[in-house]
Length: 165
Image (tube, rainbow, N blue to C red):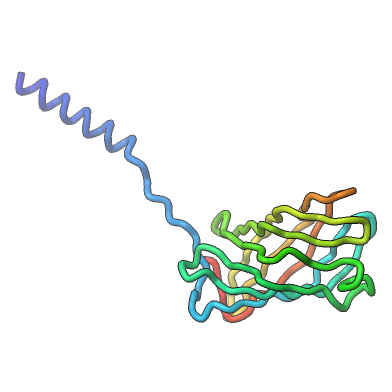
């Protein structure tokens, strides 16, 4: 009887060890204080036509590092339509980690030459080899649109040493 109980206990512990949940470490943005951040760079926005715009997005890292809130932004330079016929609206937008080197930008809203694009955009986040600049890279990233979807391609430089850890 004692032997059966010991074997049963050992089996139960082994099964429990195999089925125990593993801890998942969430990615966070650092530093969180003061946490101000600007993303700038050239982005190609393809809709019915393709436009190259200088993009500036301003925001702050959430105090927990779980997200970045983009509170304002603008399109300028590049093609003449940038800032006049195509521009960002409906802030705030939110950047959240979606992997070790990936982010999701939600709440994206653009007035475009044909109508509008809004929704989520997925991008890669590349921490710097040399401080202080991380890079957000859009690789023909689709954003839902009317009458047609938009595609974003380009790099945004992240200011103030903000990294994804």
